[in-house]
Image (tube, rainbow, N blue to C red):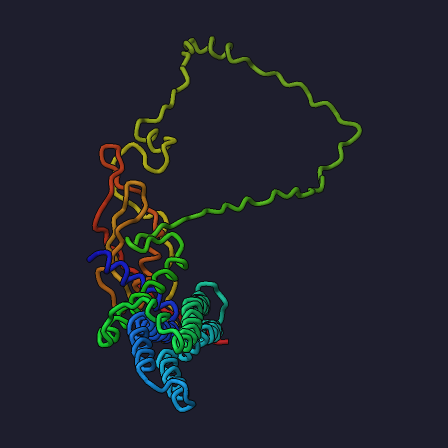
Length: 396
């Protein structure tokens, strides 16, 4: 059950990236493969049986040499070809239509990018990511759908030509059709098998494309690996030339007069007091201060609760941005003993359109782990709320 849910979530997320155009491409792929499977089943079962019956009726005729008899057999062979060819032109049309639909998705994605930039007044990569994703996903889906249908349609066209030639050769030798294998599949069962097989193939293609796009995601478990790279910019040290504004030294300098200075021991002796030697004080930090500046990192050696260190802002969903929608998402996750975040789940949200962006942002959070008895431990059931609010544009 968990495996089915993970596959369903992966396919749903993939369809959400491509928008309505990707749904149309998926429906086109389903219809194309339903026709392909229908023709393959017909070619393996019903068509050989019809060919044998046609050849048997021909050889039962007494008159097989007259022009009228030959025309009857040619009409029978043409009828076999028409039954076999039914649906093959539509398969070729659907295979050619898939990349055109992908190109349509590319154009709509670019239009969405321009609309978002005009709405927000900037060209930030986060604001244009939704349109770019739609353009790329639909293009790839159209190409994959076309590639999956080209080879079966070419195979069916070749089998159509060879079947017609075989039926014409059986006019003289009926044994050639007796060697053709046949799979006994009832016609009514063919109507049920073709759509089920088409649904399976379409889901497999969508799942494969989703796995190709999302790097680091395991489709079966739904886990996500996040990589965080920190860049530190070292400022360049510039040498500033300073002007020497010291005054010039005069040539003739008079020596200062000598002053008589009383020595300290004379005053001490006169007062009749004894000078005591006082040792310099010794300063040593206590254990708490030393532990705070220990080289063990941010963990330290004393107990403490978990604290947030890095919180990444989520990417505003493109559909919500276009519709000017705002909302919030309440998440529950586990803070590991390394400070990373795992087991992220949505507790509640105002609109499911914000859930994916919130989960992706929470996966990049970094915490100072909870310390008990000097050891970091994980904290489960941490609640965090992410709010999506649109900023008002200032007037010119």
